[in-house]
Each structure stands twice: as C-alpha cells, then as structure tokens.
Length: 123
Image 1 (cartoon, rainbow, N blue to C red):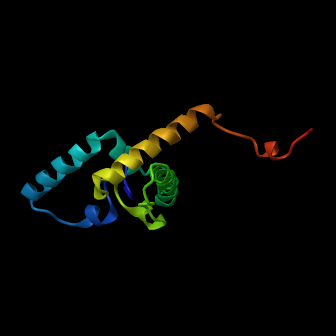
Image 2 (tube, one colour):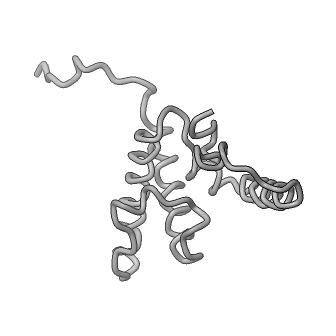
Image 3 (tube, rainbow, N blue to C red):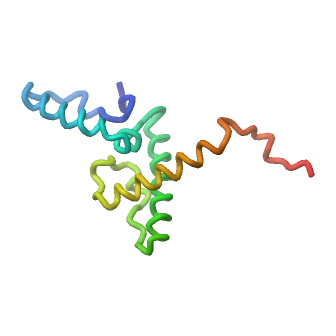
C-alpha cells in the first residue's frame, strides 16, 4: 500500500519495526489526526503522490491569496505542498482551511467534466 488511501502511511512507515507499545502510541496519534476533517483531506493521496502534491499546491496558492487580502505576507512556498497538515502552525492551518473551503465552493459550481471541444467559441 504505497502512500495509503488517505496518505497516512508512508513507505518508510511500512518497512520499519516498532515495539508493540510504541506502535500503539503511534497508532492512536495517527487515528486522532485522521479524525480532523481538514487534516485528513489536506493529507489525502487519492490517485498518486504527484497529483496530491499538485492539489495541495492549489490550496496553498489560494491560502497565500487569502493572506495577502488580510494584509499579511505570503506564508507558503511551492515546496510546502509536500508537508503534512499537522506540521503547519495554527495560523497557517487556519489559512489552509479557509482556502479549502473556497476551493470546495468552486467545485460545486463546475460540472464534473468539461469537454476539450469547448476550447473553441462558435460566435
């Protein structure tokens, strides 16, 4: 299971050995993290790691725009797309949540598929 369905398990975690007690502690921490909806969806890896990173780049770009509108400097760089949600500060996570909400609104107003033929205009 490379990457895991929701991105919770990485290749390095699959192959390492842990004492049972440490495993239990880590499992509980991961279970708690995955209860957080924003964390679970930001860390999601539905199709591939590359696609997941691109999705996070879009979210972080939107978060930077929100920060600029609030009069703050841009907190995120492109390389931050590889980071997990829980590694950001609380202020950064707030911007990410605002950006995810903005993106979800956009998704509802678009159809599931737009034909490439629509690139041409017949006026």
